[in-house]
Amino acid sequence: MIYSEQVECLGAGELKELQSERLRSFIERVHGQSPFYRGKMDGAGVSPGDIRSIDDIVKLPFTVKEDLRDHYPFGLFSGPLADIQEIHVSSGTTGNPTVVGYSRQDIELWSDVIARSLCCAGAVPGDMIQIAYGYGLFTGGLGLHYGSLKLGLTVIPCSSGQTKRQLKILRDFKPRILACTPSYALYMAETARELGLSTRDSSWEIGIFGAEPWSEAMRKEIERVWDIRAIDIYGLSEIIGPGVACECHCKKGLHVPSDVFYPEVVDPKTLEPLPPRCPGELVVTPITKVGMPLIRYRTRDIVTIDHVPCGCGRTSPRISKVLGRTDDMIIVRGINVFPSQVEEVLLTVEGTQPHYQLIIDREKNGMDRLEVLVEVEEAFFSDEVKQLQNFEHRIAREIETTLGVNVKVHLVEPRTIERSEGKTKRVIDKRAI
Image 1 (cartoon, helix red, strand yellow):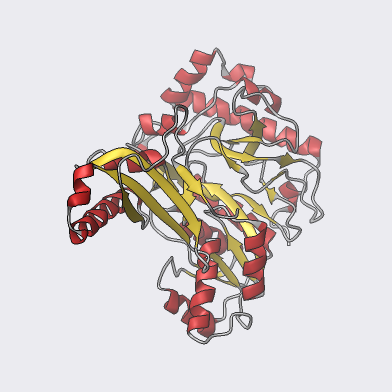
Image 2: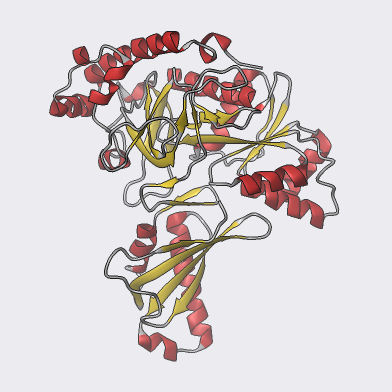
């Protein structure tokens, strides 16, 4: 099922005309209502009159995450604050978090693009969906919730955690669709086996997984243990959370509703556009967003893009799975983690040294594990084992409070961690992604 054939199956010419019309209107409105973007465009020597078609988007300046942090909390909102109906705050930031506001129109837009994504994944009205993404400030749970209601699904808002309860709901309610992080799907399988439950007899037929990187091998494992179709969904809170792109049953890339989110792939160094199927940084402009508009937002995610129409009938461009990042951010169990956050914490703990390393690996149950190696002053190694353990626990608590993710801290002796005259290797990612 295609949610809106009218826009999802447009010919190239008609789509470009629609994109151009929306971009012109978007830029006119943003320039008039947003002092931030008016200043940014004036500084770049671009006026709304210069934007005549979607091809002119390259004349516009880029937006980066630091712009959101520097104008914390509401500096990038457009129009009066009273028009904002919902606010989300991203995790994994240094200093100020990024704050995103949604107007009533944005909530409707969010619902619409998620409904499209659910149809892409194979959902139909009347299905029951078990949403095991977190609700709250994280955009995953509520985004899927809004879209499911829009499509006409029955929603079980489980949120994340309480795995035994999730499995009981699966067994008793028999939902057809599961939505969660891919690692949590494998963790639930392991828990089910411990409880003596059969995973292959579950009612789930479709799994919609995102919020963390995952490989084709992990897809096969999830599909094997749960006997479901595993679908990849992509999004980022700065744009609109999940729904920026989603796979269909063909699994040949993630469809971007480009009449809503115009995608570009650029060289991360020169910022020049790259040809199709060439890896580069994904840049997104949400050309119908109202509450907090963004122009040419640099996602830092490395992808390829393909404009060839898909076998499913949709003509929207498709991006690949995320191939990497242009910055040092890593994603652990759905949480954005920057090594600099760990460094900031360590600088506040007496006895530690500014030498550390993050090691990420994936457990057999599919859950990510984050270990932090921390050099401490020589004098600490003369302390009793009990005191060292207490010190490890204290550092772990401090890091967990900042990152929002559990970590295992290991103290190591001075000069244990490799030094470099160039860029120090702070992260060792052992996950097969």
